[in-house]
Length: 271
Image (spheres, rainbow, N blue to C red):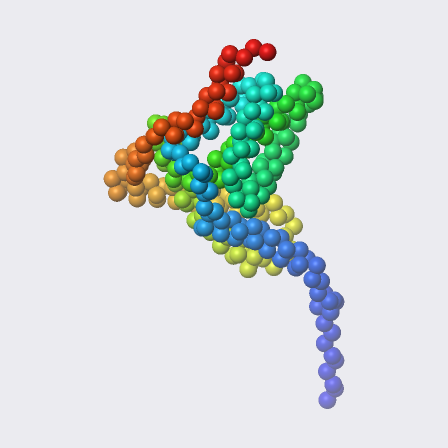
């Protein structure tokens, strides 16, 4: 009886497995999942708003922000802009150190993005206009960032309702913030499922990201229809009901006096 010849394995089975592509794939998936989990944690447990020394009515606080943004956009005098910056700096003195660092970090990041967007104006109007416009934009973003840190989201909705904003806008904001975490959870589950089923290295990660966001859009559209049907079945008539009405006091109107003073100087001052 002749002995059997040993079976030789193919060359592709004898070659050692390369772990470079696997590490790249794991790094791509894990990096995006880590960022998404951090975002979901912040949405589940948002940072509490800092209560200022004087708790203003929501509508007065929103009017003050809108007035400041309008003044910064219209003022062309550096002295008046400096006064508004000093007023904001005085308010920042009451922030805790940790929240102040958070404010500075978010404000610098948004200011850098804004400067990049307005950078093409350098070739149209010169460096002086670019610098002045960048400073005004940074001051607007600083006031908006301070409002975000010191105002809960429900106060924003109450202020919009008190100022008679359209109910459609208020309901859109409320639903978007409420169910953004649910859509993020759906995206995280989709990424985990794709990671489990992916064997070969991802050659086109951005194409894969586009496909995931397309699926997320279809999921959000279907959920919006289901949500509207559920709200309509419960008697929703399209009006946003404010649970606790707020009233303005004399100190709320007093808080507007510095901004009104700058507005009067803007109207009457002719340098």
